[in-house]
Each structure stands twice: as C-alpha cells, then as structure tokens.
Length: 264
Image (tube, rainbow, N blue to C red):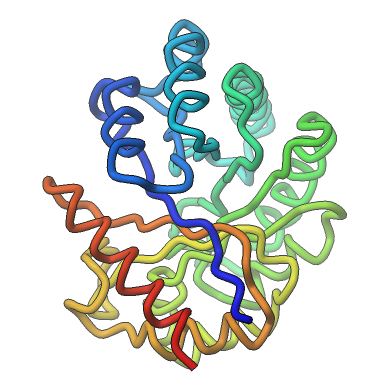
C-alpha cells in the first residue's frame, strides 16, 4: 500500500495571517505552512494572534509548519549582521512554539556576488554551518530544516552545510532544484538527501526563473519527481508553493500530485 504524504500550502505573508489560515483550512488541506515574516506574519503578529490561530487549527483538525523569511542571511561574513539575524531567527522559533509548529524552514540564502568568490563562498558556508547548529539546538525538539535556494544552487555547496549539522533536516524545493540543472538535478537532490528530507516544496517553472507556477503548466516532470520520491519511501509533508490569486488552483495542483502518488 502506497502511503501518501500530508499536503498543505503556504500563507501569503503580505496579507492578514489569520484570514490566510482560515482560507487554507477551509480548502481541506492537511496542514498550513505559516510564513513567519513581515509584513503580515512577523513574529510579533503570530504571537499576538496565537489564540485565534490555535482555534482555527484545532477546529479544523489540521497542523502547522513554519516558514521563515527567505532573505535572512545566516552566512553573512559580517559577524554583527549574522548575530542580529540569528536573534531574529530565535524570535521566529519562539513565535512558532506559540502555535505548536512541528517543523520550521530556514533558507540557504546569500548574496550571489559573495558566492561567486571561492574563498568568500567557503566562509559563508562555514558561517551557515555554525548558524544552523545554533538554531537546531535552540529549537529543542522542533524540527529545523534548511531549504535549497536558487542563489546557493550547487548541490555540493548545499550538502556541505547539511552534512555538517547533526539533526538538521532538508526542505527540498523542487522548483529551485530544477532551476539548478533540470530533472537531473531534481533526481540528484532526492537521491543525495534521501531520508534527511523532512519536507517538500512543489511548484512549476520553465527552468530559468523562480516562477512558482501551478503544477503541470511549465517544464518540471512531476510524475518523475514523485516516482523518485516514492523510491526513497517519502511520506512526510508536501507544500504546494503556487503563487496565484485563486487558491483553488493550488488545491488542484495538490490533487494532481496525489494522483501521481497513488498511481503505480
């Protein structure tokens, strides 16, 4: 019997977080991935609205994951900047605890100009290792994940962080992996990280830009992607990061992926 993962989607941090969670819950998703970022989902706003959020989650019998701001730079070569970002990340984790978040995502983000220099790239990767160790320890039971990004697109560089941080999970963004090198890159990421993959982001693109399109409208072979994920017996959580005004389209994308998962 094929075990299906749980399916959800992310809130839009530009609008009211409570209303976003209500809308996602009403569409029948298994979970909501809360964007804990400015302007609409900043940690202080999550903290303030935690009673309302918890009532929705409990009433709909869903659960919550967390998604930190993508622009946080935990690899900055400037220690004062890096420490400030770490403090903001700890606030993000604290806000997540208020709504019983089970897993939280941070991003392997840095300025591309810095990553283009070999020595600076090595420093940034080392800083990320220390930053993620700090956050894994601070989270103390909440699963901490690192997401592959379009800036740090090299599988080798991303693995240099993941492999050196005990207890760190991977949020594998399929769209980002595809931009890094097509379907070969997607398959390589899945094979490389295997059971360390704690969460998946799915959205489509044409291989050049991070478009966050509905499943099946661009160039990613999601049937092949699901086949590869089934090989590693992946059955955890999948977020459809489809950025369109009509969220029913996001739900349709989830149903398409479910059909691929259920087929032999």
